[in-house]
Image 1 (spheres, helix red, strand yellow):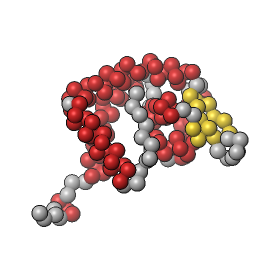
Image 2: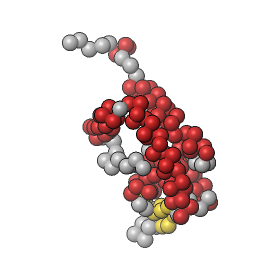
Image 3: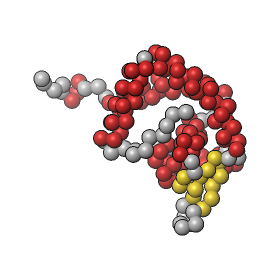
Image 4: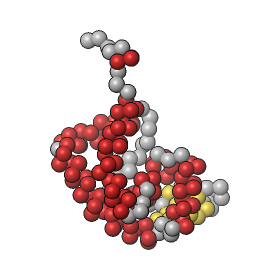
Length: 153
C-alpha cells in the first residue's frame, strides 16, 4: 500500500476545525439566546463538571490561552458568574469557582444542550457517536494532549 504524497493529503487541522464549526452550529443558537460566548460556556461547563480549580488548569481544560482567559474571567466576575480567590499556598495563583448565577444559567441551558446532543446522536447514530468520542479521546491521549476530558452535560 503506497502512501499518498504529502501534497494530496487532506489537512487534518482544517478538517478538525470544519468539524468543530459544524458541531458548534448545533449549540450556538442556544448560547446566543442565553447571552453566553462559547468560551464562557466552556469555562462554566468545566467548573460545573470538575468543581473549583486553579486558573492554569482551567485554561488547559478549556483550551484557552492564559491572557484570553484572564480577560474573560474579569468579565465573568463582573457579571457575577464566577469568583476568584488567591491560593493560600501561592498568592500569584487564583482558584476559580462558579457562583449561583452561573449554576442557574447552566441549569437553564441544560435541557436545550441535551436536546442538541440528542439531535447529533440521531444524525450520526449512537454507535458512530461513541466511536467518534473514542477516536478523539485516543487521538488526544496519543498525541500528548489533555489527560482529563471534561464530561458533557
